Length: 189
Image (cartoon, rainbow, N blue to C red; front, side):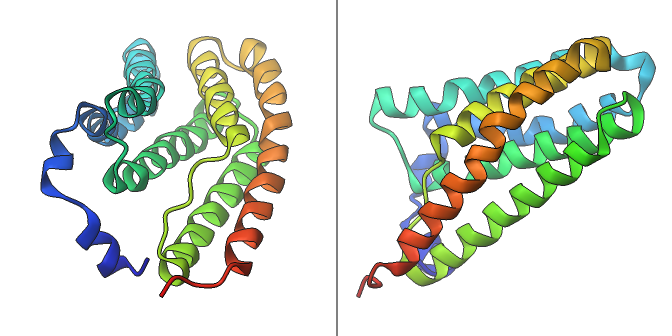
């Protein structure tokens, strides 16, 4: 769907869906979380903010499905909020807590690729692509790794980060395959 068409599909009342309010809360927590991550003396506060922000991610999707309120607004904002938070956290943790730069680079590369592919699909195929199952598992494990890096550094964070690289790699393939399949379909009239 072209971006103007996408915006026409978003209804103002979707802003009041509890699931979308959780996503908006996560977006609002991005800046304060990243600011606290930069300050070593505020590590506990950063840990709480990051945990709270990512808890909203764990809750918003199931809540939307349970209430029958899956919406274009939520499908659009949810992955953006996740990527802003986790990508920003990876960069700051690489600068301050020993998070590997190679992992940060891979995360940024993957997420920029997903966003670019999503924009192509939106503009050419009139749809928003759903998150891949491996993408959700990757987000959960990267969140856990980030929380452990904040709390204890590489000692406990690195094993979980390495574990996260398994679904992370699979998500590259899953998202790529999905993108190819969507682009091969005939466009909607």
